[in-house]
Image 1 (spheres, rainbow, N blue to C red):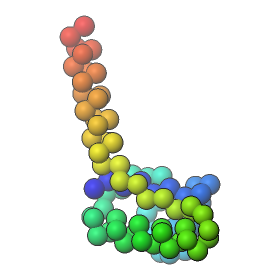
Image 2 (image 1 turned 90 degrees about the vertical axis):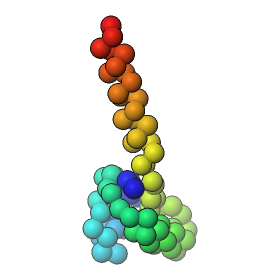
Image 3 (image 1 turned 30 degrees about the vertical axis):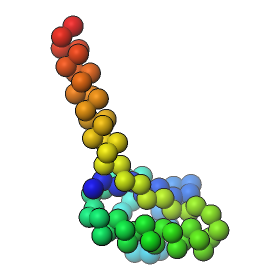
Image 4 (image 1 turned 60 degrees about the vertical axis):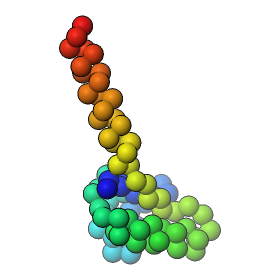
Length: 80
């Protein structure tokens, strides 16, 4: 799966302090287990700081949809 991790104000410190090797806003591949573990960590942090500090989003489907849309546009352009 492909995942994007975001943080408040793009603060990399939230991830670095936990020893998480991913970078903020990059789309990375990970397993479902890694995703679940990271999501649990994000929930703990968000609860402890009383607000959304870290967000973990599965972007696999949206990337596949974007790729499909680009392919359709290219096919349409080639017909013109």
